[in-house]
Picture 1 (cartoon, helix red, strand yellow):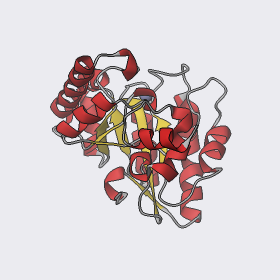
Picture 2 (picture 1 turned 120 degrees about the horizontal axis):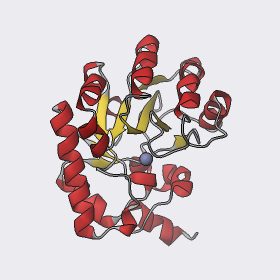
Picture 3 (picture 1 turned 90 degrees about the vertical axis):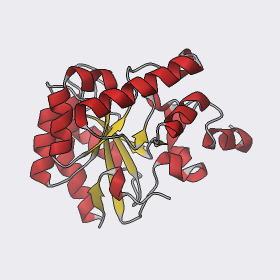
Picture 4 (picture 1 turned 30 degrees about the horizontal axis):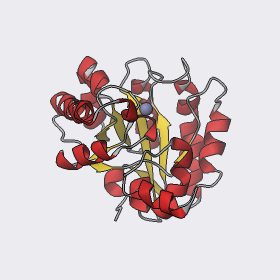
Length: 232
Ligand SMILES: [Zn+2]
């Protein structure tokens, strides 16, 4: 991959594949979610879902850690009480799209409609206007970027993930994968629901939370939502 192509990624003129996201930390730190080096942002995608999200809220409550939940509009509309509980528990809600489809397979107008529908669904369920948008699979298009901006949202991907969506994920692999190259200012991607991943994979994520948060605290970082990440 040459530098000019990387630069195109940074302005959203081309699709960003998840595998490339770590390099975004260097070429497009704002899009990657790089923030205050004393802070690590904890984010969850693909919820809410009644089978799993309440367990995450309970665990985060015990840890006294707040996070950002990138909701799917469809899920928020189906489970509005759960979406509201996320906010009532002190967490931040953001948008992961209305439905979970790869944006390059959609026309610009269908992309605009999806973001608008999702934004409204999350707003109706929670009373909150989402500030952040993360596209499904981390694949951003120019149309999505424009639509997000018009709705007042900023696009944020991630710097580190736990590969927590696979059948092979265990609490150990999730924690180790996240923390292997983790540094202050990171944005961590995890999933509080298996709506888009291997059935039950969220259990490994859930059990990774204590060692993951403990590791961050031991390294001197606070853990919280994007709202407290102080991104430029
Ligand atoms: Zn997703």
